[in-house]
Length: 417
Image 1 (spheres, rainbow, N blue to C red):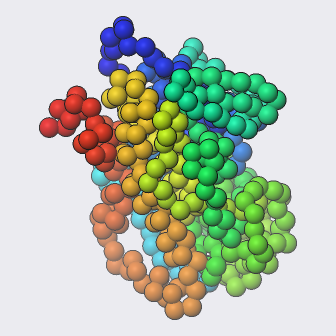
Image 2 (image 1 turned 180 degrees about the vertical axis):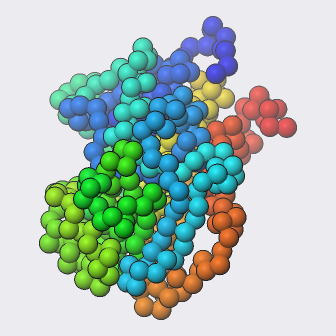
Image 3 (image 1 turned 90 degrees about the vertical axis):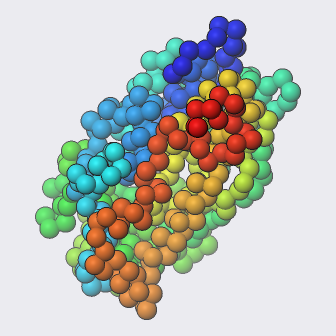
């Protein structure tokens, strides 16, 4: 980080939400000298869920935050990305993500337990003297004005700062204040579980994220924690009217949606001893998520479904970009939030919309399934890499490039030419 003149007053910021995005944002801002109060509604800082996938863009962001090596130590580096047809067990696509992939995108493709990723960032955040944690702090209202922001929690505590960042997920209280739109409940239900490697069928213990694409459903599996566990994810289009949320699931419900799936992938449904059930939601992209000293980050700004495995990756990119914007605008938080938003809106909207289309491909049936299975026949790895260049080639040093010149400080403009 560059040095700043001593007369620059570093602002204070409230971060609402202690998930991956909130932790990353805390680290990105505190490293610049910004004072942080992080408000987490749970009684303890932690993450629920199971596995997640980390593309090269995520590792680029993690390296910029100084936690890349710690995350790498807990990750499994995969050999390829695979899509299989869950009806006839035919291979639809297989993309190697070894040496050539790493050379192209300057970083690996890996999978990690969500708690391991969160924990690696949290360990670094805990050591920073400018970050204060407040648990059981469920924010119910916020007030923004000319002299800063105030967040009021359910138990009556009041927190004040110069600015606020909502990292509080799909049901963001901060977003409700700034935008006031409703989540789009997708009708897609996701079940997640982790099973010991010994309980995985021997012929499915692949070192790869594998998608078994079926009619209105799919299964995913990949190794975790040095291959000691496997993450299992199943998704289906619900017959019921869904409300966004997380509950305990039932094996009987899962089995009822996979009757047309081949026995080879279907056997995976018998392996977990317990499931967690997510009814998923996203939002239609917006072109504004900041107002004065308030902005949004991660799922609060651009919630997305899981079909490109980019939710956490986008939140990490957001955090790095937010820090870069604050530094570029010399701690003028309103200007920084506008710059950050402008740099992120188009990219994150492209991911949200691409995710929806990828979900359609995963769940194709009838003739659409046959078309899907023909799309990548004979495609070389290089052509696959070309297709994902826009997604995986993101770099921290260029994170503000998409913002219009009118929002960039003169110093930034000079550095780009």
